[in-house]
Each structure stands twice: as C-alpha cells, then as structure tokens.
Image (cartoon, rainbow over all chains, first blue to last red; front, side, top):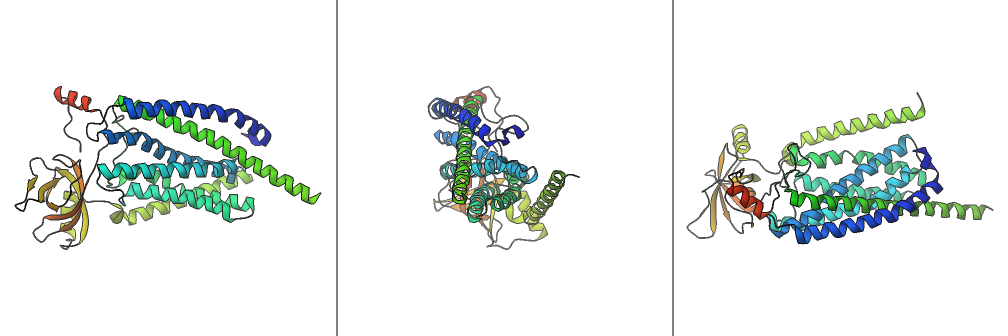
Length: 239
Length: 151
C-alpha cells in the first residue's frame, strides 16, 4: 500500500489504468446493451419492461459498492492516514451519487407499469433514498470546510456513520415486508434469473464496474493535480 | 499500543456503538417500517389490539384463486387475499395494475370496514424475484416442472 503513497508514482499508474478501464467499459456496455435490449427475450410476466432491470440492478449494485469503497477508504484515511485514501473517498462520492440517482430513476420508471406506482415509502426504496442523501451530504461537507485536513476528517466520520445504511439496504427486503422484491442473484438457493437473462446482467454489471474504475482514476488524478497547483501557488506567494 | 492501533480501536468501537444504536432504532420502529400486514399478521393484531374501522393501513398477500368477482355495479372488484393461512376479503373500486391476476402477490392500501372486509383505495402488484423468458415458462408448464404461480 505504501508503495503508492508517492503521488507521482500513483499518477503514472492511474494514467495507464484509466484508458484501459474506459475502453473495457465501452466494449462491455455496447455488448451488454445489445444483449439486454435486442437479444434477451421478453419476460413471462413483465414483457419488455424487464429490460429496465439491466440498467437498474447494476446501478443499484454500484450505488452500494461505491459507498462501501468510500467507507473503507475513509476508515483507512482515519486510522492509517494513507495519503491517497482521502482522495479516493472524495473522488468516489459523486460517482456513487450518480449511480444511486440512476437506480432510483430507473426503478421508478419500472415501478409505474409493474407495481402501479412511481414511488412507495417501503424499507428498500427509503433506505436507498437515504443513501443518495448521504452521498450529497458527504460532498457538501467537503465543500463547506475550508481547511482540507479538517474537511477530510469530518467527511470520513460522516462516511463511516453512514456505512451502517449499506447492510440495511441489502437486507431490508428480508427483514421487513416491502413492496420491492427480494434479491434475485445473490441468494441462498442460487439465482432466480434464467441464464439467458443473467449473463447480460453480469456483463452490464462488469461494464459499470470498469466505468467506475476509469472515472475514479480520472477524478483522483484531477484531485492530485489540483493539490499540486495549490501547493505551487502557495510556494509562489511565499517566495 | 501504537497510535495506529489506538485509532483502529477507537474507530472500531464507535462503529459497533453506532451499529447497535441503529439496530435498536430499527427494532423500535419495526411497526412503522413494515410496509404491509399479511392476513394472518392482521388477524393476530386484531386479537391483541383491534384496529378501528376507518384507520388507514396496508395489507399484502396473494390473490386467492377463483376469488375475483365483479360487484353488481360493474366497477367494484371483490376478491380475497391470502397468505395460505388466513384469508381477507377485499373490495376495490379503481384501476388495477397490469400484473393483477389470481395467484399474484399484491399490496393494497385502505381501511377495514365494519363487516371485516378491507376496502382498498389503491392496489399495487408485488413482483417476485423470478425472471425468465416466456418460452421457458411455457416449457416448464408443459413439462410439469412449474413451481406454481409466483408468490
């Protein structure tokens, strides 16, 4: 881990990873969308509306994955003070917020024809909405504190407190009666999705993950450059 | 103990406390987090502390087979919702969602009438976690491997 504590070394590596991850994401997205929108047969109950699932489910997974990543990076920043951990946490927040927004919107569009409503206040939907607000609050906290180190610490504490929400989202459908259906893929007796639909879903999930890596690398490089510019300006003023 | 270890224990300790606090809050509010009652949960509640007619609540379960009828006025639907243990008669006047049919899971919002029927003002279809192509569903039915209509 400490090998990458050197910003120049990390920037170089990130510069190599970013285009590859971006290209992988683009290819997987094209293949995945083609399979999901054209090849996959209509569902026996939902008909063509099932195709929304191929965007909704990977977004929802990423919404939770990004927050877990953010929380782990925040813990590393607080405990081990790794110099890149704060940056990684800060850089992943807007990406996670974007995925959460996408999951909420696509879920709503699916819910109208299938359930008969755009929105209900059940445990799953409400906890995901809270996740979205946690992302926004986290980003706002970074912006509202001038001192970078203090901002990082406050934001990390908020991120860790909010991490309690991630298992609540995951298990909300098992712990309480909800309108949202329980998990289809990660469940005890194997996926309840036919393989012809499961594979496109997994390809889309991989595409989203690769997209996350590419964006994360770009955002972290940007943050590092901003930090360097600030340091240079400061040096100029004092000299 | 190094400073890193100390920080690790502090952060870990706080996380445990927060998790415990969250768990207590969620348990205390369980009544409000539950989105709907199944017919047998409702029957249980009525025994313990009857819900007065007219109070809004949601019930959920499967639409019982061969229970859907149209009332004499032609627009009110009458059906029974079951969780295979208890049964609750439901009256509803309005638009039913596309997925509504016998054997389908639904959630209805409304209130209990004096005669014990549930008068719904909104009916939502509850989709289950099974996804499969039409052809596969038909093949399964033909082969006699169908697990019954989804819950």
